[in-house]
Length: 83
Length: 257
Image 1 (tube, chains in turn brown, green):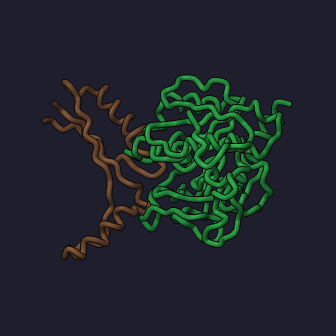
Image 2 (tube, rainbow over the protein chains, first blue to last red; image 1 turned 90 degrees about the vertical axis):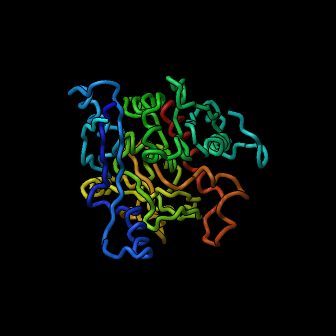
Image 3 (cartoon, chains in turn cyan, purple; image 1 turned 180 degrees about the vertical axis):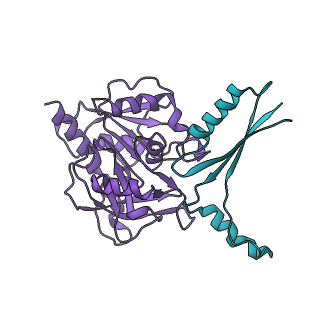
């Protein structure tokens, strides 16, 4: 089954409190090379059958309306992944 | 919804008989927590609460709607994001933006649902200190001309409980400037900003003033002996939150005159 992968990230100008907590925890485990972390979301939408242009358009619309909030987040990637 | 008399009978304190016929809908989503407190606040203000279920497809004949706090759909995806697409929400959005300008109050998660619904601008993200916070919070009423704040004095300071994790109000600078210029910042945190909200904003309204959202919980400060007064020594009164509910009732009665 092909899947459509949607990646959503907090907007660059928005402080990401979760990323901030993670970057604080990394050095405690010895990972000292990372100065910043931003945490996003990955959605996998499974399609029964072929991914047509219409289905991909639907996925893009879903990404903009439900999967992300344009006030605080950007949809950074929508792509088809074959199983 | 059955309102158990947990702490005694809910006796209306604002015993204006002309208010008793007013019906205020209180919406319950899966994961809503504060619907019973909100219904009790409505009763204490002198009106009749009407239980509304998220899957309802009609608002009935309610005169106003409260969207209470809680964790609708477990805050999955984003706080309020899934509740926004419930069948009842489209009815509320239509009624709030129609000529009738149905008064709608969103408290905490209800505020988050109103921003996700685009009835109010901006959004809430995690508190800047990353912790859940529960405290008695002083607010300043910046705008007493909305449907939900008419019984307060402009600039009045009130104390109501605040309890949230995703309470940091954010919007872009242009939106914030417009909110300030149009008097749509309805409540501001006083003395302490509990979540990093931009410009200390605790609550806002739409342009018409019928839709108001805020993070703190006025419905938890409506009964003598059970409000914030006795805690923390920060002043205020046990019933500072009751004015939200009496305000909208007086507005409804005034509009129907």
